[in-house]
Length: 514
Image 1 (cartoon, rainbow, N blue to C red):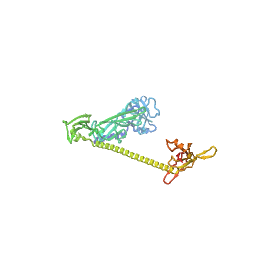
Image 2: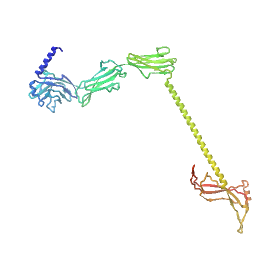
Image 3: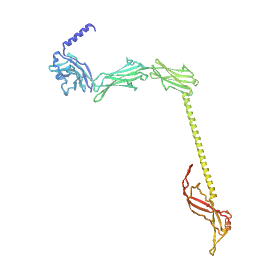
Image 4: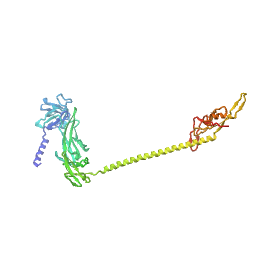
């Protein structure tokens, strides 16, 4: 600004201060969302002579629509608590005595479309501001909000549309929207397609939202969308803007690249990069092309991908094979294992070891079971032999010590009533008391012993003759019933339980000659 311009400006300001006149400052155009509210920012000026009339208690603000006639075009009066049916609901938020006429209208509809004139009344002060004294405001009611604006910044420098950013660079997306009256105020939100996790460093302040992150190959061709939302009484109204990010990055070889072995070796390699990379195959460190031992084919996968396959003869199985992808931002390599992989060998070794271990465990269990079985059988045989020896010893003692002679004295009665002895009829019998039990603790009593000896008349000779063919010894059962009461015998070394049931003893009666 030169000196002349400064002088003109200073003269104008001085004139405004010294000689004030009626003037007003209003926005020329205002957009309002249907169903929300609208704010008219307003500042006015009056002549010096009316300053004394402009008081807080007496000042009233009026708004006229599409004309300056108070009787025909009045739509708002700040002095009325309840507006008339054809008036707008609102209030003056500014202080009129401070010459601030900022006003808000609620429940905006298409009826609010038009040109607005402000009028001030305060005592003797009554004045309507028209085009001659300043601006008038035009309100335009819209049914949908204006969409926000999204801009891309790389390293804090704005990037024009369709320009690409480099991988690992700092990227910022800024969303801004025009402020429209709304209660509650509108909000800005971010989304992406395809969906990816967004950085937590995004912030929202007023109607400007920044989304900051470091660019990677996963962000390439991702569309970021910024949405502005107005929460109205009947429904929400939204608008959105988006931008698609383009990222340049070095080649990336897919982990699924592998080889198959049949009669020949077939390997494939899939690489992705921006710009689209070139792909080469190296055998033993040297590039290879189509030949009698190798066959190479390629297939483009979109604008950034490439898939290549190579077929090798089995004679080349002992060479090293490498896939190499290149573009202007870098090189990526992948080595293929043509021989049986170490991992497979290790896997086979592990499986063999597991199988051997399982067989050894089974054999150990079998041998252990056999040994335990034999040991238990030997123990049972030993117990049986001990029981047999004990029974044999008991029988021998009983035969030696418990054998008693039973004499049956055959006394013949004569007809005279006198008894006469017949020496030939004397029978000798021996009774062996043999117990079925292995051992007895004590015998309390023998209730009855029965010895039945059949007498054969005619003497011993007749009896022997009657038994001649079978045997000279006649065995007759002698039943001995005994109630055996057992008691427990305690010893220092062992403790045994005695037999508590009743035993049947058998006596063998041997017939002897006198």
